Image (cartoon, rainbow, N blue to C red; front, top):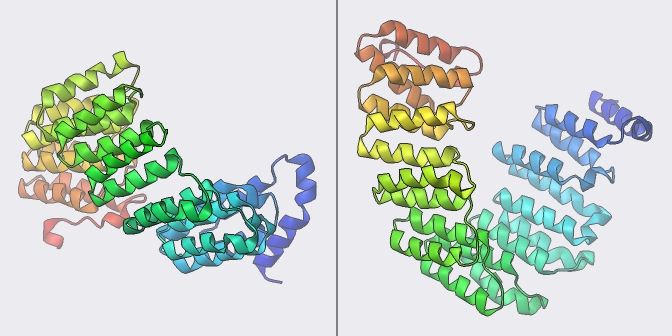
Length: 381
């Protein structure tokens, strides 16, 4: 008997005992999967653990496992574990089928997601608006945007289902991703005619698309339309910040951030990042430093994108001293950034004859978990 089979035998033979002393024996199975670094063994264990009824109720375990495999581009193994699920009686439940459709969609495997949907009647599984929405979502997540409109127009009549707000929001998302923003707005008009109320998701999707694509005036019209029925959240304001920054309305953007508290909201890393990027484009080093300090000292922390933008800007402004401090901050926070950004600082320090500082960054890059950076002094290239 292999070591894997011995482990599985011990795990399943002791489940009844564990249930008495541990109210959630599934936690030990989840932990075992989390600690398994060999992806082939991960697949084997997942399939074996799936034989336990309660294991199959844990959506989070399915999502984390499939995400790991997708990140490693092991799509064949994703198909192996998800197709294996069809042998269980759960496949006759719509919620279980929806899970498989969604997992395939998030992995960019639309053909497999569509197959699960098409096979539902064979498994005596109802196709309601819930699975219809899952199929639309799989289209969007797989970036098969061109299929969304066809499914939306044809399937409801065929399945005798009535699209709901989730259906419309998914189609709106697809149009926004395609750049068909006017069509996206027309879908809002259509849903209102059908007696459905656009919600925060509807408007945030539209705001993000219009402000991000430089259509600020239209974005403002959508904002006004939203405020009639929906209270904006921080995502709404962040979308507007992006719009203001793209229009070089920095004073208004700063004012908006400063007013968030009065609106019962709190600026997050995306809020500050929008301001910082705006001032980077303006070439205003003083304001970039000021807002980065506010971000760094607050409850939220700079992310890799913000660090990258600020370090590149510091190098452009020949402020290598600050760039060096930012790099040290990255290592202190254990924040992974693009190695090319750090190499830019190393090269700048060497150019300014600050060899010791350059060597320190190279050494930091070789320590802990940062060997991936492969930083080198210019003379070593």
